[in-house]
Image (cartoon, rainbow, N blue to C red):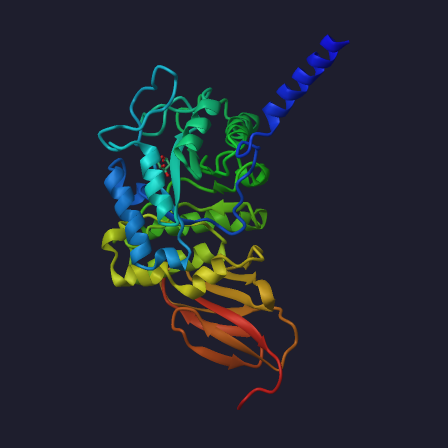
Length: 389
Ligand code: GLA
């Protein structure tokens, strides 16, 4: 009898120990609005190190980007050694990260920011470093122990049979491994839109890439927009389409094109992950990246997708406003008209996001000439009460 009681007490203790250590309860990261931050890949490729990440965190605070909402400092490919340690763990390259990755996380956290890292759902990363396929649990644990808050999980060397089931399996295995760490880690699925992730990823990760890699060219931005507009409806609070990181500031596009890049990312409720050197930002790139009106549209708490009619996007915002973008992907200026549905009101205030001008209109039909590669964006607000002449 006594032995039986002791045995059941022992079993109970074991059961409790396996579920309830503080800080290890399985949790899920959330991204109620699209994540904002920085990633080194677009501007630096494999040239990532401790100094760059620390200086980027400092720059993000000093230049006002942190205050504008940018939060994640994300390390991309090439951070690790080519081999695992004797215990099978990934190791940060000590030449690039001489103080280890935990020290980087501590530095970033001390500035009120979050640290992101990169892994791959294959045998090797795209640049040839160790992949996590078959090592999901130990890699997720390693990242959690370092204090990582965000994982971008790539798709190179995946040995896949190309089936959707294989994509779902590989990406879900890492989702479970992240959850099992007990640390909330935002999970950014990067399989380049290959298995139509918008149809299965909303329950698995917080964001998923919709297309192949962006480059610092207008042709690339235009084609990514065209590839993402048809799937906007699959996003919402906690799960976002990711048309890839920003190129604003890298020099390959005109000011108009960079404005369109940010305008359309905001209209698409995309993550805003700056991909340029934040330590040497020009005033114009900083102004685009921190545009308050566009960030408010991107981060609108309703998280409602835009509807697309031709080259006109209309996005409902919380509080009854609407964002409208008249987008001109063409090579000549063109006249575009938007007609939107808003509650009947005596008049509407149109706030032109880029010029800052406010005007009052009696109808919700807007006709403007949009320059080549341009986007004119308005925030429309129904006015109540009498309108001043
Ligand atoms: C892939 C990803 C890129 C970048 C590189 C790194 O191409 O899509 O965003 O992470 O790998 O090697």
